[in-house]
Amino acid sequence: MKPCKIITRRKSNRIYVGKVPIGDNAPISVQSMTNTKTENFLETIKQILDLKKVGVDIVRVSIPNLESVESFKKIRKETNIPLIADIHFDYRLALKAMEYGADCLRINPGNIGNQKRISEIINVAKDKNIPIRIGVNSGSLEKDILNKYRTPTPDALVESAIRHIEYFDSLNFDKFKVSVKASNVFLAIESYEKLAQKITQPLHIGITEAGGLRSGTVKSSIGISYLLLKGIGDTIRISLAANPIEEVKVAYDILKTLSIRSRGINFIACPTCSRQEFDVINTVNQLEKKLEDISTPIDVSIIGCIVNGIGEAKLATLGLTGGYKKSTLYKNGIRQKNKIKNDEIIEQMEIQIRKLIK
Ligand code: SF4
Image (cartoon, rainbow, N blue to C red; front, side, top):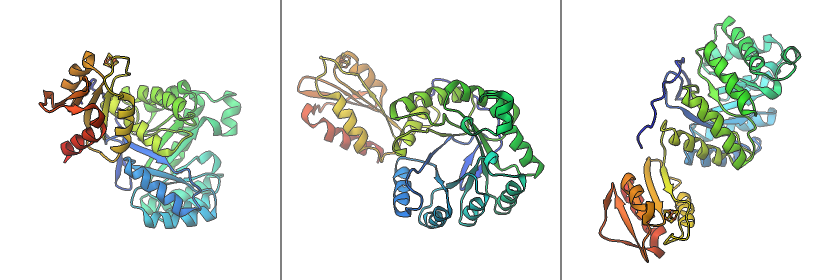
């Protein structure tokens, strides 16, 4: 897949979450967050492993109480993916999470309490070389900022972020990234654009509480794509009220579509009509499921008839064009002599794709 547009990324510093680089032109990393009870470490570990299978780079785990931080200790031992401990309100949980091997902390300094507590967190983070995300959120702005602006505005979100950044600066701590998330796409976009002009730290971008699978995907795609096309954003998280595996899939679909980062199969499929010679929708759905484990980036076209099938097949790594009873296969644009029986398309295409990536 060739890039359709050269994106000039905003210059930013680099930090590392575990071994994953963020910022300074590093590949845009894909994050997600577990939605199991962290106290249930077996279920949480399983979800982390499931997320890993679909290509997540970094996983965030919420730590709401002492029991969950003890569970986090076990989760850390059983997984080797970079883990971010998500902490609100209780700074002692942040200290424990760092002791137990967190690769990064996500805190909203506005709800951690006084600056002494934040400085305690930072001292340990410095000692252990652990980065922090300053996560400003339109839903949890500090009271004085809300009073000043009356409602969450881009300037309010940026002021909150800058306040914390200046405090981090005063403590000589520079291993941090920042997010200014909002559920309103325009508010998030403008906040990130303003903040991007003011700082050089890496930006974690996302549309918070975006909604369910369909609506959240649409909102996230619009907001995140807009920012990425402007070169803003070093790591992304899609926030969906759905299985977090879907967040990772959507994230890669956005990155693939923008030709920023590819992973797995890019399916090109027609919407179907009465000309289709086989059941395109079922074929694509089944193949997407069966081939989820593939991380090699390739383009595969599955088209129901010759109207658009030949043209698309010639551009794809592997292309199938629907024909009467048998369909025609193209490899790297070249038509293959042996046709595929229409009732064997799913199994044959799986074989062909797996052969190609060997
Ligand atoms: Fe219909 Fe053929 Fe177009 Fe698919 S490619 S939508 S089957 S005309």
